Amino acid sequence: MNSLRLLYVFFRVSVLNETAYRVNFFVQLFQSLLGLGTALAGLGVIFSYTDALAGWRPDEMLALVGVYFLIGGIISLVIQPGMSALIDSVRDGTLDFTLTKPEDAQLLVSIQRVAFFSLIDLLMGLGVLIAALVRLGEKIGGWQLVAFVGMLLAGCMIVYSFWLFLASLSFWFVRVENLLEIFRSMYEAGRWPVSLYPGWLRFGLTFIVPVAFATTIPAEALRGSLDNWTLLGAFSLAVVTFMLARLFWKLGLRHYSGASA
Amino acid sequence: MKVLRFWSSLYSQQFKTTFSTMLQYRASLFIWMISAVLEPLVYLIVWSAVSNGRGGSVGSYTTGGFAAYFIAFMLVNQVTYTWIMYEYEYRIRQGYLSFALLKPVHPIHSDIADNLSSKLITLPILLIVAGGLALVFHPTARLSLWSILIFIPALFLAFLVRFLLEWTLAMAAFWTTRVSAINQVYFILVLFLSGQIAPLALFPPWLQRVADVLPFRWMLGFPVELLLGRLTVVQALGGLAAQVGWVVISLIFVRFIWRAGVRVYSAVGA
Image 1 (cartoon, helix red, strand yellow):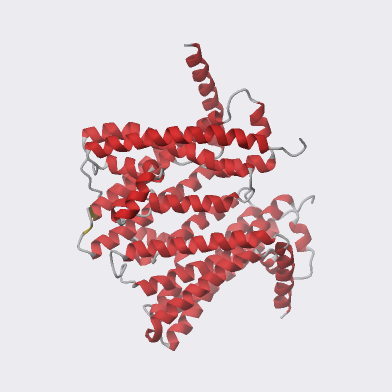
Image 2: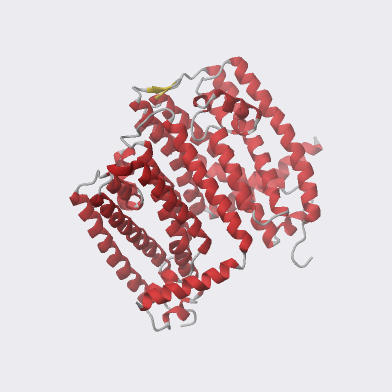
């Protein structure tokens, strides 16, 4: 309960911060719309030559694009800002201020910055997703919807854990921002179903950089093409990676020596 | 003669310094390479899937044809890309441009040297990657001697057109600090009109005509199609002419927009 209240406070502060630059809202809106338009036009080009891409129909691809923007929006809303701030604060020692606060430090660093205007991406993703759901209509059963929401949550957890793991590397290495960039460029590949890719790339995008869990797997849950074992596996993996990332974060904290200590 | 000696000594000195600077940024170069490989690779895979679903070809492109197209595209993109828009936004916002303005030569020369040095470092690695991709995806193309010979000047001109145009675009930072929106519009135009997302031959004819009169095709798609032997001699020569035309136009842009930009530039503290 307390952490929800904290989340609300941090969110409010960053809204106040960002609404001071109102023009940024329109710039962000413009850029997000362009991004979505580009993705849809790209699909348009491809589906003018085929009616299914590796078994995925246009409406299912639309759902995948929705998930891609939704999760991408969550990443740039809280995960990325918080984690880059963490890396900076480890380097210049300002993490001290966070550590002295009487609240779980992992929670504090994770929600410390909210890029409020990235909410546009998130909402747009949601809109596309809803449009896709309406078009898919009765093909989607109640169970599929439950599995879909579950896989979205699992995907968010896995992506968050992965970022926390990368950012925690900054306790040992100086230039970690570059690794975050790698994730950003790999995430682009998540716009397409990973089943399309040859085995080695599919493996890399699933288990080395967990892009598949963020986009393809939730969308597959929606299509109903996942068996229960995969659902269970993805969910357990989410729990395990979350715990491992927390462990790694604690290990890093022990290695942290502060600004002047 | 004296002029020639001046420029060659200027550039050899520039290369010495920028090459060692670029070696310092190995990690960033490597990360840039991941997206430089991944993007064409994704389109290669998507179009191969479309092609296989239609019995092995889309228009004049077979599955192997797509592989050849996107691998060649990756290489041409590597040779012609710039990151100058980000660089200028930073230089102008932080005031670092002031140092460049004090030098007695136009700052574009150090940018050219920078750009070429980074490519000298990354190109060998990218050629190996291209070789690996060729083994995996079995590209097919009808290479011919004359098209390879014309490809060399076409690639050089493509580099010039792209470098000069993106350098001009970077000047937008003189007037506004929100260049990211402008850059995004530019990247989308490149995506659809240069042949990045798909070979231009797969687009409707009217869009191909639009691509013909704009510069983007001449920066990327044209050299790729030329190398793969998809153009006739007349089309190849016409393309070279279009490239030369765009070099001239963008040189005029560079000259006037740079002058106007420097006039509005005021460094912090000036």
